[in-house]
Length: 407
Image 1 (cartoon, rainbow, N blue to C red):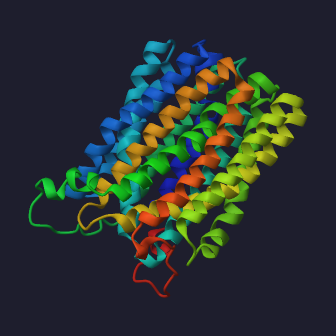
Image 2 (tube, rainbow, N blue to C red):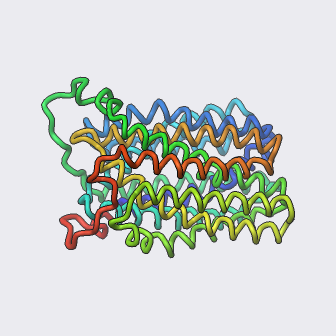
């Protein structure tokens, strides 16, 4: 039920996020640079919500924090329907940021707590499949509905997204609350001070931040505006491009998860960097030399290839964080990783927004270079990881808590 709720949530996000920047700029007439800052502010607000949520996950449990995150999301995304200027957009972006900051550590902690270590990567891989299926279908629906000629169509996208949060809340009522790890007290040695002392984990946080900034932030927030305004791609075609990305993930994610069992996790990051670099260079070529339908076809190829790299990332990231977490601190580890993701996403959104306004084609070349640098950094980081977490575990059948039970 937990991952089914995540699917509903992902569908709503898929309806909205590919068109978020277009909505702010083309529909509400907010300048591109400012619109990019609105997206960045949402991420910065998560810096406040995330660490607090992580501590509360360890104290009161992940499920309660998920309920809060859904309620805040209803307020934030529902409020965007009524936005007419940048000031109002900033207000609701803050609410959305706090909601996201609470959602990610609590959701990831709950998935990790409901699965055994040996099957955890498969649970997160399954989450990746369902989330991307939801996002892809949502992007397709959003592309069919939205047109800048009628602002009400964009407002309807946010109505759909808000309804999915309500559905998630209903499904969450069927999810059990796992027992929390007991400890003597919650002094400094059991709090964030202990997490921050884990320098190897901080290196992983930095790696994930770079991955988010150069990958997912550009993919979901910056590319749609580039495709529409620079390459003449329609909203419907943008939805189809995201659907191509999603279908590849749905087909490839679980086989990749099985393939990576027993393999080096940092090598998976390096392969991901090479794949993403190729994808962004393809986007640059398509944007410079092609227009309209021709550009859309090449963009679809780039996004399909990009999806393979996402499958490597989806298998490794959250399972590695859970394996590195000290007993009783899972929520805080997930929260600090989420903070890094927020920083990386905010940086990617802000830099991407301004580069989109000043040097749109150069943006993708720079992204390819950073993707390769991130892969090289992962290989350097590998030597500092504990030996028992360097490789993805093999699934041990039958685990005491299976992926099916999480569903």
